[in-house]
Image (spheres, rainbow, N blue to C red):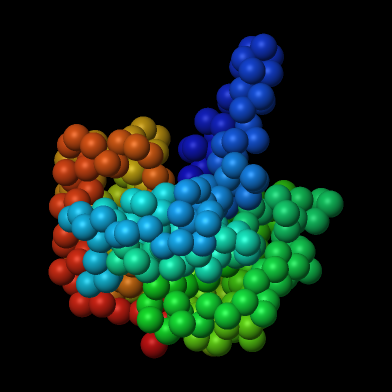
Length: 321
């Protein structure tokens, strides 16, 4: 999701060929490389449930510190189902086969989820590597006819995540996706699910470059990294940009690579996360990216501290005003 991380991934391609060959063996079981969507849609991807979920049963919720529908949702990208009992928000790919059972399991844990319905971007680029509206619609259409409106109405579904970094030309073979195109994506989503908020992972400042009015796009996304100045200044700018364009705002931290390209420390997560909650304007707090470290030690302590602050906020929808 960040240019520095993409650069690191490109550098990795030039490592010793034998190592690359060994890594390739396990590639089908890993999350997508940054083409980018959160989790791979493979038979072993994170959208495939196990145990009770595979049998269509809802697991018993575990009552931990973060599982609650109060406040605004807080959590991570690619967060496993069971972790919704600890952090109550996430961005997830949930395949059509398991969408309903997964939504039931998330709700049972007091969780809320932003849905990535199109999945990995490699499926909806054209032969030149550019964005293809036709292919994107084909991916989204896999969910047509599925009745999950109750999860939209009760707030279990935060919104429909349309596209990642449309502003980054490296995602789209040198051809960024315009605000007008993102609005057309949002319009198509609203035709299928009128009540589901539509979200783009791009800062509102980029979305504001389009002179038109967003009638179907609901929310932009501001994910803090250290090289974007102070967190307070970054938040203020993005809130102002979102308000000016009539968009709601999702916030978060790049906890994996947001400390000058390295992982954020526990103290940074706690301090910067608290600052990013400094405005009541935000509707969700979703971080890049889930890893086992967010459930242990000082990182867990910092994450649960910020999660507690998010729970104490007034609940609000990611629908635009």
